[in-house]
Length: 544
Ligand code: C2O
Ligand code: CU
Image: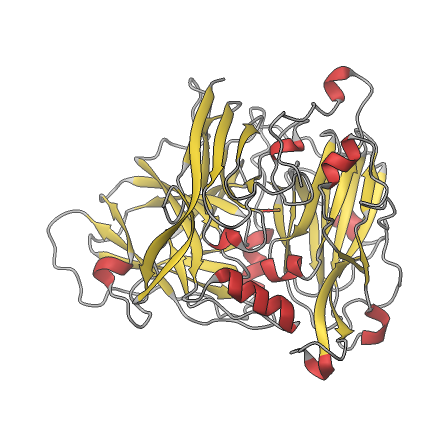
């Protein structure tokens, strides 16, 4: 394994999209940010310099960081922010991840423009579990706001309602040519291909608040990995990808040489949505007359839950002798977490957008997470947790009723604020069922766990049934992921072995939901042996 070193300088840089010039936070002036390349098991060191006027932290999304949460990144969970004018050297400890991950800012909403791909290649003498592609291309789905994102966020938090939606979705930083004030020559990402060749596309959904559909006109694709773990090849016309998730797929240029659109659009089971289509172009090499308007792929409708769920439910681990799976079987810790959007009456003196002068909040097991003023990890490590967090995060929801019925009495679901952690014994075998609720209205929640990957052993619509549903779990080849969309008014069951000691954030990867409090923290205790214990903090760890 090698040590690879990168320099990341956070600054303000000028960018133009949709005829709007703006200055925004970026790393090294790039949007999207630089791609990090490494091989399995390497140590990547990123020297992060903050030369902007906003606090920053950076999270290496999907990297387990064994025993070393100190560089994991979520603000006030594992570290205090890197303040303007300061520097922090982050150690990204790769272990068994192989495939595509990404990095993003984890401080307020700054990830809107501060993100990039993290590509982990196999060991030097190893190959992919699929034929060697002719070339590899990262495709990052993102967003563009004409306004300043910090202002968008502040307005959103103050109003208690839904945030302003972005002005465009992007593929590799480009909106495509279907938005007003954009044109195909400059504004669409172009992927040049040669007829007959196969390409490995490494797709990341870096969008703030939306699950996306993606499809390429006339071509089908074959999924080979998700969240830096290989899957059984899965051929499909389209994919569904949640914020936080990554999907690796093979694309063979097997159609008549021409230009074809690739396109992405929102899947929104509820709430606000944007039905615009973002385009990129697949451009074959060779001599031909390109059609004046290439074929657009037909994407599923924005409210097509069946198409969204069907794609995700078809994912399977590779699960062979070379890539075995290790699903925990003897469960020692059973957790049942409800995910809710809530309402709370506004105090008289605040402007409040929500219905009936109430503001939106979100919660897990009826606890709305409030970030502390100092980092939970530091407080825990130094034995000073009192006053920073409580250890009473509930294993089960406080109320029992039909969570997904059409009208859940709103008064039942006034959440409590809290900074509560759930403590797990080292090596416990955890089963966690996420239950979507229809409190204010049901919606999908892409849930992400830091420090771990988990097996998605089951999922369904409606209420989870403790007796019946486990009988249908897939314990043979469930997909290994670190972000999974819990379907609207449905449930998802995951399993993992708590063998990575530390403090680990778990939250919805919709920025507006995590800002409303849809998150919680696990503390995984140390094991007995020295190699089962948290490593000490680095000397340059930022202070609050
Ligand atoms: Cu990709 Cu806590 O985030
Ligand atoms: Cu959510």
